[in-house]
Image 1 (tube, helix red, strand yellow):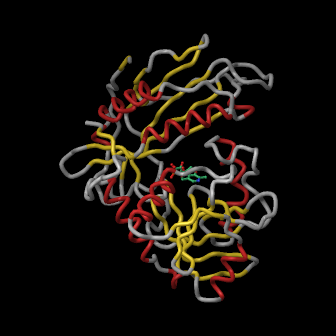
Image 2: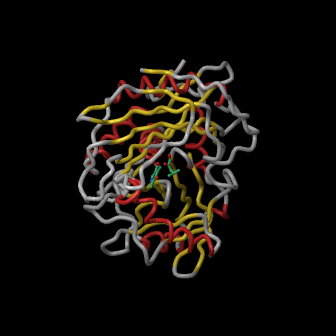
Image 3: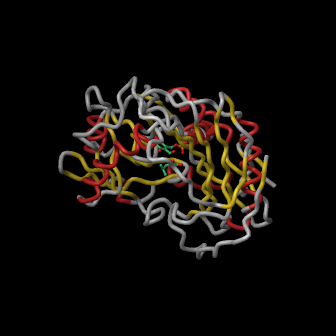
Length: 351
Ligand code: PLP
Ligand code: COI
């Protein structure tokens, strides 16, 4: 690993008002793939890339990314949450997009070093953390449509607060009836850049109507709920916690997996199943739609207070965060911030 320290440190933002993904630390990690192998990891001062206009990523979107977080507790101890699972998922994404896999242990050592170097950028305010964004892009200068031979893997760090502007306040989500995010056999179950580009128009239309994000339906029948723009979704119906099963078009969220484990271990009945819009509407009519919430690294646990469908709004749990979402939020963030015992061994020490 080669390290070049920045001699020109940036001014840090106000940590109590960070928003999401607006500020970047002093260093970044870069690792290039050339001649059939990954080159040495470099930690460099945060800087622009110089990119030839013919570079593949700029034309065909052969690119993938991940999102994970580092936390600093009040004693200065820094940890990450399940990051090996993120890097494993990144390798799955790489396989799906014909990109080379990374050596997870080696890359994690690089990320650890990068975070140690920029550790004074980790906010300690409640709900704040250091968002870690690894990405990999095709780097050939070539317009033919084929897998590239050269790639750039990089990691940038961003101190973040809550993903949604209103923090933990319940979100307003619109069930998307026209556009679809992903079909089985497509790229929905991996974290490739194009998935997000393809989701923007629906998000914009929903936003003009006053919603925060859209809830996607399955592509074949537009009948079953799948996930939200940047998070997986859960419903509590008549006391049973239900989340869409991973049918091949849904991102297997690490927070989703953590939520299922925590709930089951605490006596909740959890079903990974197909959930139709009809079932949700009927539950609402019968007074059995107890709660809905999304979950993800950026979004943490995020209650859904309003669900729009067919031009009408359903209000869930009086537009309040419900008990299951609150319990999960407290337990998962409790583990992440080192306030609750980590019996799952999800935390990885960074310093
Ligand atoms: N679904 C989508 C489309 C996402 O972008 C994310 C965020 O990474 C998630 C779900 C949640 O996944 P995770 O909990 O691994 O962050
Ligand atoms: C995450 O939760 O880490 C995400 O990647 C969601 C979003 C910012 C794309």
